[in-house]
Image 1: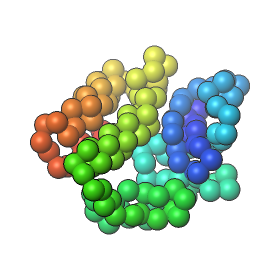
Image 2 (image 1 turned 180 degrees about the vertical axis):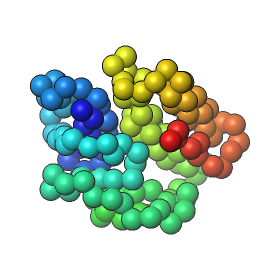
Image 3 (image 1 turned 30 degrees about the vertical axis):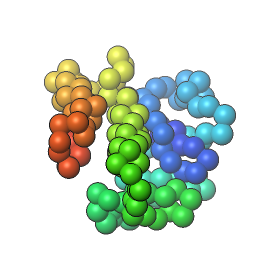
Image 4 (image 1 turned 45 degrees about the horizontal axis):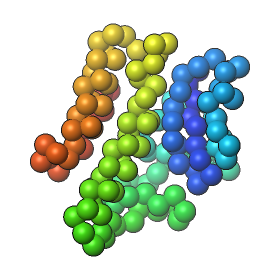
Length: 137
């Protein structure tokens, strides 16, 4: 079964595919979990329920888990921008960790697609692109 592990603000920090009797091993203090296939950064958890995020206005917005709204990034320096990009990238990598587990239900070819996507995330934004890599379908 696939579970979403979320923090105290409702942000899904990890998705994991494991038997029900093993999920508690993966949940840290202050985290909760629920059974779901949502792991792509389009949902958050509130009161133990999965909630779809509203449409993202632009790539200059990040989701604020306190207000449950998209807020425009207004960094003061280039380093601030890079830090926000790294945080978003790291979240996307965390959310796709399950695809590389030995017991993942994905085929070898699909795992490779996810490996390529994850490498593209690691290379972003150093390659000079302004568009985030698209995850495999």
